[in-house]
Image 1 (cartoon, rainbow, N blue to C red):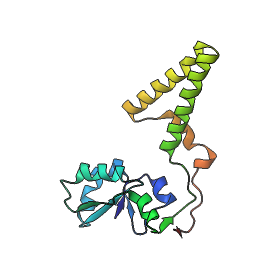
Image 2: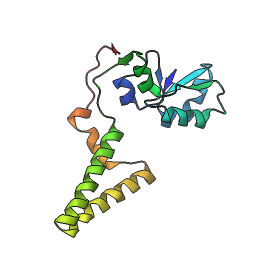
Image 3: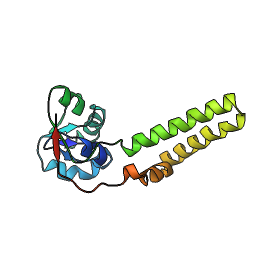
Image 4: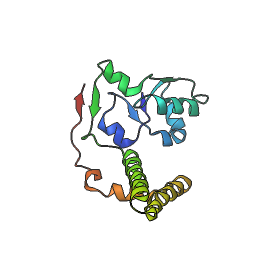
Amino acid sequence: MIDVRSADEYAAGHIPGAMNVPLDEIENRLDDLSRLGPVLVVCQSGQRAEMACTLIGARHPGLRLLEGGTDAWVQAGGPLVSTRKARWSLERQVRLGAGLLVFTGVLLGVFVNPWWLILPGFVGAGLTFSGITGFCGMAKVLALMPWNRAASAGADTTRS
């Protein structure tokens, strides 16, 4: 079983026995996967796992999708293994931060001064740059925040 979520999402809670291979690395790990035989692919809700199956399914005919992902697993009463305190993924933090900046800039631009509309324009330009280059300045800054610093390694805990 492989979990195609980010390392942080995987560490926050995954199905026992699942191996973490993030979606953006899956094509590079095809040789490793082909040695495994039949593979069940899982993510949080099933969307990324379905994308993984679409990406590499023709080259690995033994792929199967866990419908509904870990959300469905937990709803069915399955246990999760956690290797550290749950926190939001960096990608989710960037989306929240960008959304708040755009929303605030638009509100201030409409109700206070039109010059505030520069803020959502700046955020849009940053997101465009990030999409083209793969470098996200906001993610780099958020990664330095205290809540995103790696905690000392602790024992795995299982919860259901």
